[in-house]
Image (cartoon, rainbow, N blue to C red; front, side, top):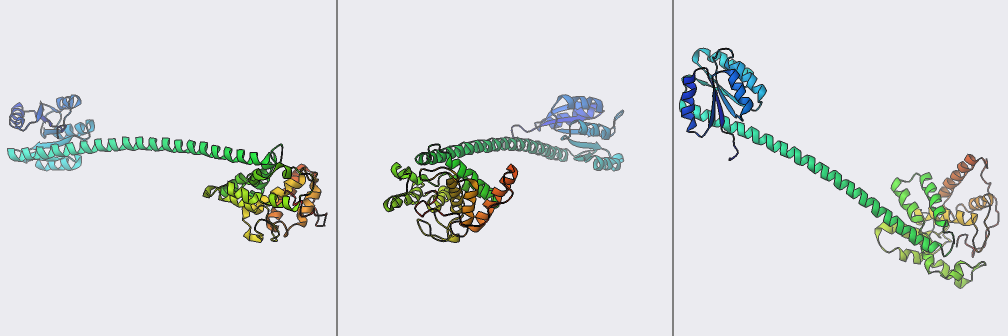
Length: 376
């Protein structure tokens, strides 16, 4: 490879040997440095990119083992080869094993064997360096990828948040457009949302269910966009024909909300929030659990708000009268379990306010006529 290291350091206290090795090995294309001592060899290592060092074992001041140990500390990837004579071979082999040197060359050496050893040594060194560089590149790329993923996740989070806000704003605008035909203040839909939220939490629904049902509760009367103002604002009872138009708002609302799976719960609420537990409601005459749960919840919230607030066709009822009426309708108009949860919520709120100690007892307080239908 063009960037492969070919720099060799020869350390030997006999200049004749160093010169002989340098002369024979230069033909192999190596860049060669020589040093007469371990100390000078360390200096060369500090200033040159050496890949392989060939060091004599027996040297004054600092022998080959001590030199190679310091050299390894200075340059951990350095490939080290020890030159030793027969007399010191046993000690040299022991040092090789202790220092994990690449190998040794015996004096007198065979030049072809030495060339082959050096060739393998440089190949080993360059593979180690290349692997290290690849590892560093991989680590760097992984860090960049991690940062990119984090940035992407944040971008997705922000865009999802913006999309969610946009969707919610659209839902609110649509609900408000319908509601202002029936309620000048438009506050009804927000009261419905709060009541629905309390009931969903009281029922122990999942966070996702609570969010969807409460969010879409404000669309329950979206179909009233198609109901004439003369019917919505009529102070008296509706005629049969007017009731037919009024009741059609449930089907109109479902149609307005399209076919997207996202609005499935909203469509259930719009179509079925006037169904009654006993099957007497509209538009499908569903009963009990056949009525979608979101619609059963919103139905109760809608009636409670309608009873306790002024409408064109009725004055606002006080809290006691409204709760008595709703208690009487358990199992008829309302799901008894949902009503029980709602009544417990009202009881706790009353206790916190210190206004009531007991909830209403069950006695008939005068159900409005069918044509009033509480919240129409």
